[in-house]
Length: 340
Image (cartoon, rainbow, N blue to C red; front, side, top):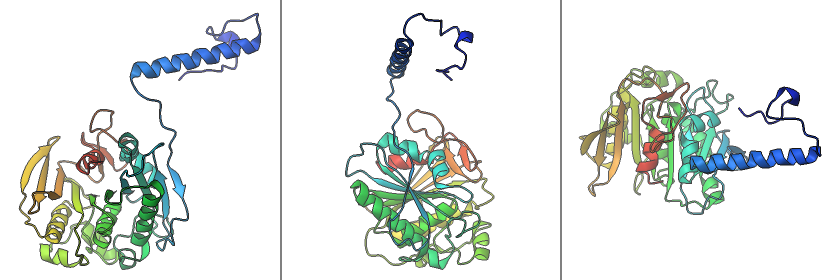
């Protein structure tokens, strides 16, 4: 780190004694520092960092779920840009998940508003979104309504395109993502469920644990019946799961796929399969040929968000607890699929 103001200049050979005016020396030093900084930035071929920060938003609505709202909006964001809502997992918080998952850097890079809801311990001691409580996953009530209010506020505040609004989340945030897609399909164009659960899988805390592991095996029709009816176009769904996840059973990937292919009225047989960064990827297309459900199986990964730290194309994220470097960044893949 550069040390610009040493406490003892006589011990620093970069600051010789001067006999002329002290203010001129300070001014010269500042000029040289700024010049060198500009040269370094230009040489690196990058722009200076944005001044935008994650900030808390209050007064976004009646907030029946008693959640907190945080937002990241890049400086100079043009009207008509998308909105992404990103929901943290248990024991995490909005800022840590937003940064660690890569969503903050992608919002800056691609230019979209990022909404980061945060659970409070008064609602759940482990900081989990209550994806299993009926009062929190019913349209117009509890936590889903609070998140919907945040989303509407962000759309209005940034002049966003209401047709380009997406939601994603990890673990309990993934379960709540499925709940948002099921209860507010008119608000979201698509969603990404990472190590999450099917909507309606559990209705109590005890039920939630059996849903997480070993999981529940229902038919596609049974899963679809848990989703409220809706006459409009359903959101697309991207499903991510580690094959070595012992917190949320890998079987939940299949159950989620069955739920959302049934909701879309399409076959549970993949329309196409391939690999992405070496991991199995399956696509399920509707009659028009559009991929409306897709699954990513991250072989050997435990419970967490897939990331790929770095500055290259498709890279993002910062490794940490439940933020797993597997050379594939889920947030970047979603950003590309959603054409953000």
